[in-house]
Image 1 (spheres, rainbow, N blue to C red):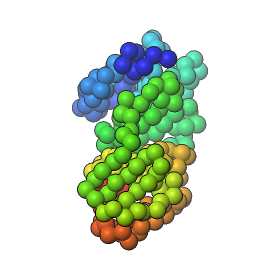
Image 2: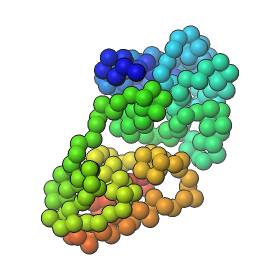
Image 3: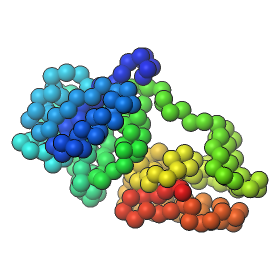
Length: 234
């Protein structure tokens, strides 16, 4: 597979909110992707079937033809990767999307940083693309230092002993300092499984990381729980 710098993946954005559609499309093009736009279900299905796409961003609530029905029809002939975009964040809605053949699910409102992370992760899985934002070997935020190679953490020169999962969680949050990352994204990127609202394991991992960093002298509120969104490292 050619690297992303040589072959630009083509993404179709099917979203009836004109402003959001334009924002996403502009961002995708700025990041080096090819991007096409559709604003209703009928046009979106026609476009999705008329040419080859590497990914479709599909809103659920669309005029003329709903997102789930569009996906159901698409899956009869195409296996194009699809990420659902929806304001309906209930677990039942996500399950319905996955049953219809969705590959990922992004609840609104979402941050554009996380959207791009999820797009890149999905394209890596489906196209085998190299990550353009390859992680550095070390992250330094003030007195906090993370070494990726041996999962070593120090704060003010003192070692902070973390499990591999705790290290991955802290690494992702520190790597995207100031951004609220959702639980569904963190479940996929850190725990490597789908999010369930009944699963408290990520909360426990974050609590232990916060406690260990606080014991080393870091202010506990550097690791924040953002209500309705997820977690953030400040």
